[in-house]
Length: 188
Image (cartoon, rainbow, N blue to C red; front, side, top):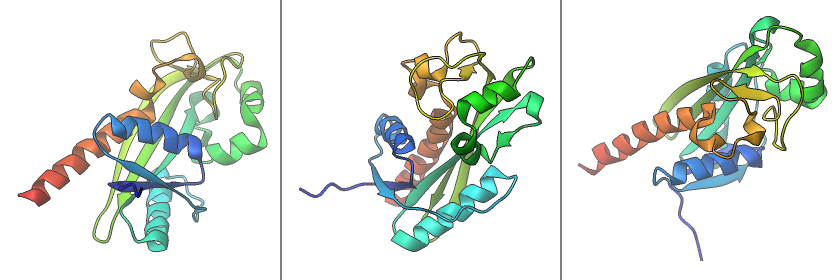
């Protein structure tokens, strides 16, 4: 049986898709998945990276899509790894980050959701303040075992309700409000 989707999430990261799918389901949006490798420009701007990836994704599939780009910004490292978070995770991982962060542990996660269709390119951003833990805690993917959201004592990897408070949730909520309003406007 063929499933119909409202939009497609384009990424090479199935973990991000699963989180986005669960979050958007709660808003009544059906999300499909297209696993594609996308052109990733080198830039200090997450928004610029996300928008280029969204245009590339749309050009490859010709369907309404969203992509997500995010970064972990650590204050004591002048915002590093920021837009280079994926590369840094692949090369030095959480252990490398923990070696770099010594005393000042303040950090934030930033997420950019970018929507693209034939006519529209629109981005939605959100951030979540927190700190870097002293050791890895919990089983999770990416930086989840070392990021402790503000007002918590647990890392993302230890929190069961991550999808209700994460930077990704906040950006997807902004996107959902816009997207559902856009659909209502088109129906009238």
